[in-house]
Image 1 (cartoon, rainbow, N blue to C red):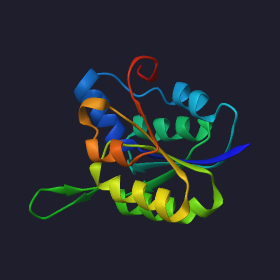
Image 2 (image 1 turned 120 degrees about the vertical axis):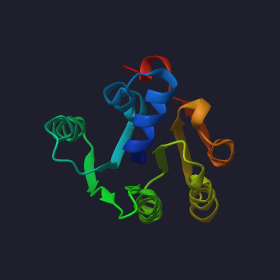
Image 3 (image 1 turned 90 degrees about the vertical axis):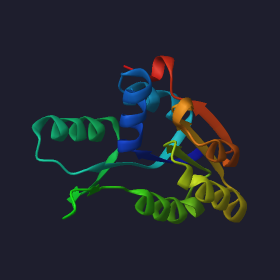
Image 4 (image 1 turned 180 degrees about the vertical axis):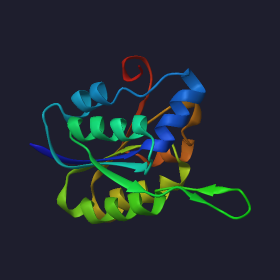
Amino acid sequence: MEKIAILVDVQNVYYTCKETFNQHFDYNTFWRAVTKGRDVHQANAYAIASSQEKQRQFHHILRGIGFSVQLKPYIQRKDGSAKADWDVGIAIDAIELAPEVDTIVLVSGDGDFEVLAKRVREKYGKRFEVYGVQALTAQALIDAASSYTPIEGELLL
């Protein structure tokens, strides 16, 4: 059975689905589709820590689906800007997981992951699947992936 690792950039998928469709990503439908006939070695959802009850409930739902929720604090800079991105953490986990799985499944349209997709495919000889909102997924990432699935239709709530 094919062994997979699923890595979800929660902030990216939230904002791209909201901006493009004014809808939410359907994590349950995604999970059923991506895991069918496959063994899930690791499934991480990378999110921002929050004291808001609604966000805490959402993280609980993700855990119930099967995700390990990785949380990072939201950092407010002195100049008023904010920082809360998981790109490096996702990349490190993908590189560490690549030798242990057949396929890395990334849910993000962030073009910064193009290099990661190429590295996983070329150095480790592994499949690298990408799910992202087509209008906001970098073409370079789509091109670097083994396969690309647009988030649309049944993957939206």
